[in-house]
Image 1: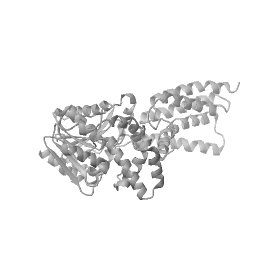
Image 2: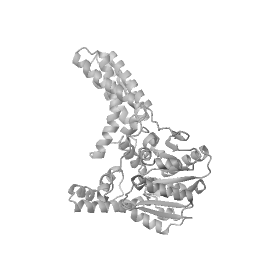
Image 3: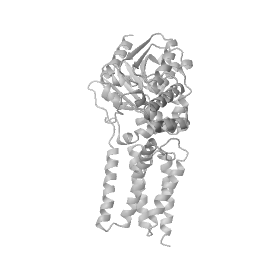
Image 4: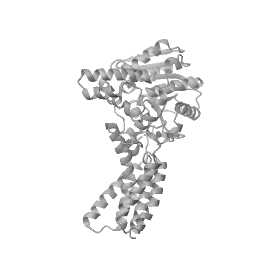
Length: 450
């Protein structure tokens, strides 16, 4: 009967696993979640170790927790909670998803068992002390809050609008307000805005949105049943209303990049009375049309450069659209090389990101892409937005990827707007606003003058 206490402690471990699977299905994403995960797991491990004299406690307690955890989050969409996938992105999802969660739950649970059962040998003490110290340091580093450098006489803060994170910076609170909606689903541009677009803060109060599922808004991805196209557009409107009320301005300027530009145009269509002008950079028009061109161009590039494995992979899976993010992995991996796009940093070196946000940056992109991208494929601005209700400027890299340039040219040729201007930046690629920020500033100055 020595093993009976160990079996009894399987129940609280399983209950905690179910709670963790419901509360943190993608792993702890905040400092509070990380700290609670460590404390609760360690307490259950310690109590089980004290009560269970059998060595079976080492197996039964963590296994019960793990099984309950996986069952509780089995219906959660996205690679971080889904089955492991044999690919480079799949490895990233496994390590930064289940791997980080194991460090913050299973590891303290096992350390709790070890401490409760007594550590007598010197080597055993070292083997326990080292991971305990590492875990304490990791949790302490995760608890360091994000912050943005102050601007004397101006506004500089990391705000929350509902469950969404917004960085707001401007040299004076009375400047015109500019809302920036970033590109890739799940991506965050706080770092690139901070390091490359400082000149914009002299002309505007610039609000940079972390879209639902990205950066500080990653936890807002759940429940995914509520993450619809309408919800993503409403997010832009909600933040717009917050900024209008906060800074007492009837209308603001709207800047959209890449995938964010698609949602921005839809927001303009719904509530034109809330915006003074629109600036689109790396403008998206129709995702299926772009993806098909990407597929053809990357396949041609792979054949011409002898990338036989890429040719095989693309040929076997066929052209898009695909049912999940894994089908798009070859396109996301090779489009920069195929089009000669300059590598742009994720900008994670700034203090506006917490440690856990940095750790989860790729999973945020993969999960949000998996959930949102199918929703966005129904947008076609060539039919959905043949006219814009406000003056519009477009900043386009001279080396923009053909998959985006071809649909854009088609749309822009027939687009009607009170004013429309196209500025092409020689030598720049898809991220022209960050590659040559001075050209963005010129476009913004023109919009202000207009």
